Length: 465
Image 1 (tube, rainbow, N blue to C red):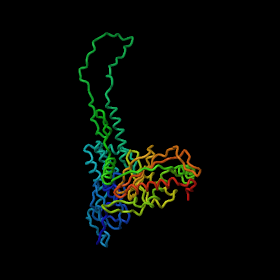
Image 2: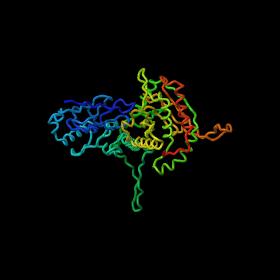
Image 3: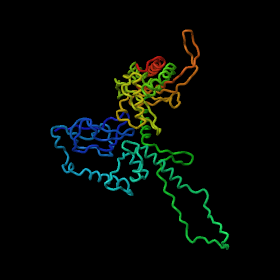
């Protein structure tokens, strides 16, 4: 009898661990090759881990809720002729699965909050990720209250953003209710009717103490808190990870930045001519970003040293050209999905692949594969009105380029009849690179090559060719 180990897969260049959300299979169950056996979560994405072989799930080493390093063993799959006798107790296999699930749900409820109003034992609560449960625990949200939150995730699952939105609304309501009245309430007396003979008498004070409702205890400090003349905001988990990665990148690489001014008038004119036809025929919006990706892919073939990484005193030159694209999320955080094999697409294919990747990013449907194996990264800072920047390297890559705003400027144009002044569309390229292996001559030459590809863009190019 032999077995195969299932290990925690690589989830991306900057992800080194993941949390086991739940096992989709039990010890002793039959598993087919590529069938998902557990679900894991990172700071960027939730994903399922498939089995690399067919067999019987033997020993499970990683418990639900446990954080596991990439490369660590999750479980064993029995693959030899003895798979009909898995290493699992018969009593466990014969146990009533419904009763076992109900018991587990009740245990989770009891450990989650001591004052929870539970449902009937026949009602199984929906699944919550460890991140959502931790937030709920910190905010003193009971499981009963948690179950009232509408989820936008798969199978109505409550996402991090769902619970944060709920907390924001709850805090707003609590602040309004607990706000003291600006003026005290004066007693109002009704005027007597005409037939009533009224004799003035001394108004007696009430012989009881007024009932004062205690002010509710303040909620945990998750919203921006004001202390004197400054504002304190607690970082969320993703922001903490981003901060850590940026500091690590600056400590690892000797980063410098070069800038190149680029005349992209032909590219702008081309897009103006083809965008309506492309939308009508393909149902897709075409932006400048696919053109930028194409220019980067071509330049990486000309200068393969920029498509590399550093391992100690060795330089690893990558054969695949996989372009990471920095995308700003709605919550203000940043994520870098990867467009694989960017050099193999024509401009139409690049546009569709890029649009699909952005849609998945915005919808929160990225997989671990979408975030892994990037070899070079771009950042389109022009969308925020920025002209240039100094982008930080995504480790272990050695280059990243930021594309600034395209501005109309008076520009010197060289013609066969001499120099003239024209209104041109000008773009600034910001190229940061790792000076450990990329010197200024190479880093600057690469940026100029990207600029050349954009400046020489054919304004009459067929987008469908």
